[in-house]
Amino acid sequence: MATITVSSTSEPARTYLDHASASPLRPVAFDAMVPFLRDHHADPGRVHSDGRITRVAIETAREQVAGLLRARPREVVFTSGGTEARNAAIYGAVRRSPDATRIVTTAVEHSSVLDACRREPIGVEIIGVDSAGRFAASDVLDAIESDTALVSVQLANHEVGTLQPVLDICAGARERGVLVHVDACAAIGYHPVDFAALGADLLSVTAHTWGGPKGTGALLIRRGLRVPSFVVGGAQERNRRAGIENVPAIVGFGAAAEDLTGSLPAELDHARALRARAIAGLATISGLTFHSHPVDGLANIICFGVDGVEAEPILLALDQRGIAIHSGSACSSESLEPSPVLEAMGADADHALRVSTGWNSTAADVDRLIAELPGIIDSMRRLRTS
Image (tube, rainbow, N blue to C red; front, side, top):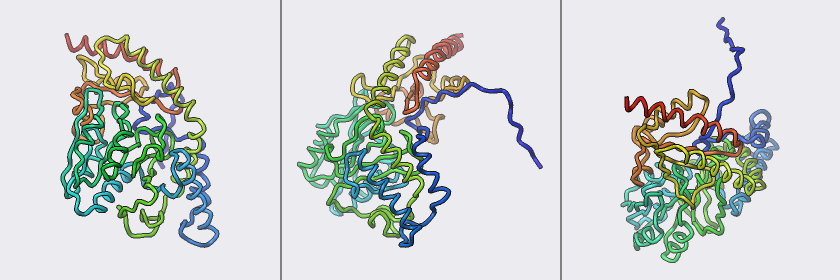
């Protein structure tokens, strides 16, 4: 029988600065999930006592998520994550307006938004952005016509963190009688998200980038709005999303949301302090260009380009030293193409790196990155010139 040998040599703890991709699970979420992984396994749609336990757990989580997002619980529809929520919003909005012939969106949306829009049998108007990844509200509103089914825009960008003028877009689209979907997946946990104040018709969120579990998210649907379901075949989620609910993940989502509701102001202050600390350290390295918006950005994301060195070898060298960040180049993800966000901004994706902190990040994490990065860049530049 094969045996596994565990080395007794202790390795230094890794420094994880890629929370915008996936964040560690908050302890409160883990603790809340365990009973529903171990003890409570019943279908929430059943009327026996076991089913009622899981049903109550889901509805409690719905209230917790609604509380974080300033929404009504009945507006929250649980999904398998942000990607499904985005797809469901676009699918439902287009089919709600069978005579519509176009969607308006932007060049820096998440790939699941752009791919879902392009898959629909109608035209797609894509609005460009400036060098910081920001689109103009006037450009989006000017593109709306009488045959527009939906405007789909992000609250903040997932690659560079730039905040977008969604309040003006939601107000203007409402005056024109057009639905608006706001993708808030990157913003939740790193910027206040208020569904009621935003004025959006549809809002997509995910759990895994701020301490909730992977495999769950939500689509918020404004009270009174009816859109066809994307996933059909059952009456779950008040007939708005079919399929048996992922009870452990939903419970963890709710627990994480309740935890964040109470700690968000302090977490935002901490994230902004870490971001400022990182920017100050990075600014001492020659040949760096910051791609994030200088003022209006998420509290946790820094995106920058490195002159003279491609990002991929820097990322790998940092990884060898126990530091995880993200690259905008093709080899760093499942895609074979460079980041379309950075390309739309006119930035060189092959030279771009993204640092993103999260709920358990520390000043020591940032300091470790700043201590290691200059030497790596210098050595690679010397190799390039020699």
